[in-house]
Length: 435
Image (cartoon, rainbow, N blue to C red; front, side, top):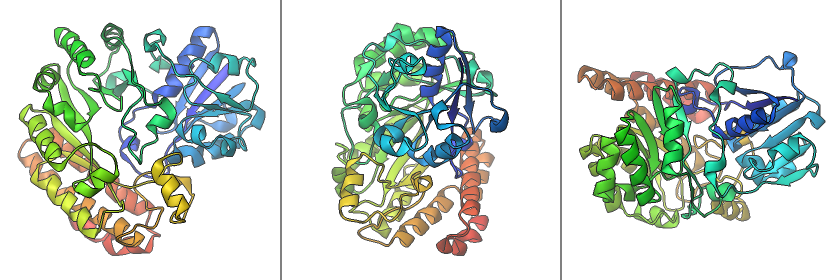
């Protein structure tokens, strides 16, 4: 069969529209089907927009996040419903919604069911996937299947584990991958890394250092093979293990993406983060001491956040010299505890999934208005990602930091341009041009 996988683009400017890093799900599934003998093409709309009127495929497989699912449904409507299968986080949580546009929806991990679904042995409308217990049996994702993707000039995503036991109240990861950690062996990961001709790697695990012993084994092999220039996602506790932190630095870790979430102790407790403000400060200083840059991720708009919380977060990020930040608006993703609570309280005022991207307010906050939350976060972003700060870093010859600050400045300007019809943004459109 001729099978086309499609990853829809987001409707808004965001970091993923500037750094072309595809989701791994379609690549794993496409590789499995290619190895089975099917003819597979993968289209990531952020990389290459296909001509849908001329797309020659027997089956269309669409993978969507909540923020991209509306676009996914638009794509699905271009084809006969019986030719469309959908999967991904959002449709796994709301499969009945997706069935309006697809003949079948695969819920959860699809690697062990995709062949039977495609070849017609599983015909039920909602197909329950199965967690892959031994991740080493999965093939190395074949990125050559992605049209227009050049690995040699890209940041290549690598998955070394699945699952997360922490179950933060706003996160949907555990709904898809479960609360049990599953890991690839260090040797299996090294074999994949050696097969890649890439300028950089991103370990896209939700917590790269979740199993310190396993991570140390992997880092020791990476150090031996002299891998450089990679990034990962970790929790604060990664910085407490000095041996592990030293290995990360020596093995070429250049950036860590850390879910700090808040500088408000009450908010941290409500998010069930199991970390304190002191832990956050210690982690930032330890990473920087090891010459590892920090992308700090915060969630604002919770029950304990006021207008002051936004500016306290900005001051904290500037004081601690964070390299880049995300100040995400709390987003009640379907299937999360936050969604259930806000929905029960009738505080969610839109189900326009395009807005569920962490940059738009979609519910009524408790301690400030929706308008004030949206407005002040954009203003705070404007202060952090100012053109002035980019130029200052450039003059200091901190070229990488200047580049990322400037990228943030451009993304912010583009976001405001896309959202100019929102009345509260009119008053800051000119000011962000000066900052």
